[in-house]
Length: 319
Ligand code: CP
Image (tube, rainbow, N blue to C red; front, side, top):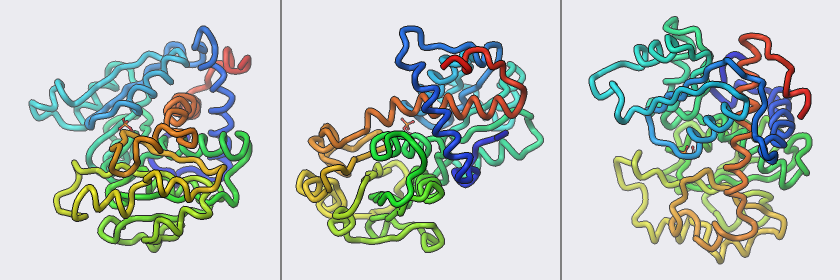
């Protein structure tokens, strides 16, 4: 895997292999010394044009746990304010030795542009491009669902997963629909009509506006953040109205099966798409998602670096 740009880059076999690799590498995070020598001497650049807490820090932790050197760029405080382009910024990072560039950008398609340009020869991992895709988020979500509902083994065949909220602006939703369906799950989107993207009928999922009904037989419910910063119009009458119709309230959580889990990619708008009590309840796996993100990104970096040059088996063969 030279690049990871979309969840559609992964077929069933490669997706399960990545989840298995992440499970193998997860033991490193439980050790006193959280480090393997696997990527010693290799360099990764985090190129973040949009804000991030979880994704940027977990790529950094993942790279460090594999002993890679990490260069981190954030647009704020950089020469982007002087007009420097994506191309020149990427060339600058590659000149500093970056073999893999992890990019987050506000423009849909930015990661693809970087990977398929003749600007750089580095591999590109998409850490979120506009409203398009966020494939490593989908991988960590699939990993978390598999860990809780499948004892960490195999795929997600026949699991019923409901994704709820601001689908229109959500790169997380698009990547999850692609990856979860590849892994055999049945996916249903729930959203107000104003927040359903044009063309959703071609996605491998069902769509409904009835949240209560969708909850009844769900194995996992993934709440999406309402992305106010991407909204240029009024998509719903008020926060109260949104929460009443599409929020995972305490009343709605009681409709779930006993075994059902609740996910959220973060950051959460508590009291809007999810109540504080549900976010902190035993069925919430939000904190697990963050922890699993490090293992999943270790697995992605391992695969991407491995496609560029042979990785020493030192370290990884002992986990
Ligand atoms: N889930 C997610 O992408 O979070 P951050 O924006 O904090 O990276």
